[in-house]
Length: 64
Image (cartoon, rainbow, N blue to C red; front, side, top):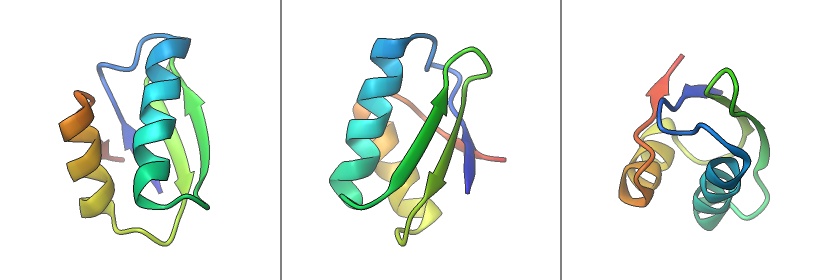
């Protein structure tokens, strides 16, 4: 799945986003692109679960 995260603007943000996603699914494959503010995720978790944990981390996400 691909998520748009407007608040992800740097490498530090990308690490926080990755950590939040992997707190839901430790085996998730996460590819971040802070310049485009997009994250691609291969996961067994639902979009809703990822959006909730990202909201809690301060990185609200919209499914692309």
